[in-house]
Image (tube, rainbow, N blue to C red):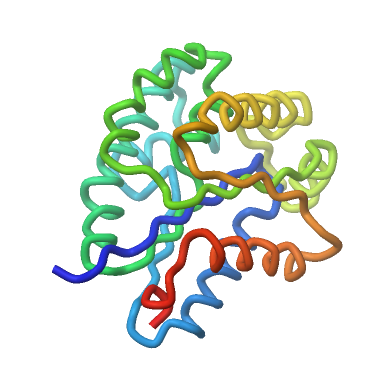
Length: 213
């Protein structure tokens, strides 16, 4: 079996610009890697529980907040076993838009931080990202962007929920700093400048020369 791919995760409250950074990293890896490929995925994924969770976020499926927590955990289990690990083991770099830190950000108010840690523990023991980037955009700016982008409000779209999620993210990164490799990124004047800071960190701390062949 060849060398395992790298697993890179992007986190941030809705409207933070994390998905733009996912796209920029995919473009860069596609351009520089001669043999190693990269694969982009997201959570909620396209698994059956992931589609249910996505429907709940959009308001097309009604679930209790506690039920939604279980859908996220079930989706992550499917996602890791059927998508993420198989790609990594085949030497493909995986870029993921959201992973278990999103649980801590958005569901801590429902079941508590420690409970979420317990629910994710098996997955965290099975796989940890080689790097998780948190794009720390102010919640007011995220709410403004969301209002411009979407006609229909989704779950967690208002500024109060976004700020609560941001604070939960920061708490989770602080509490797990000894076991998780992560970086809090303050957005610069444009997305490309922000990306170059992310890329420099990846080259220094995650990728070896052989990863970019």
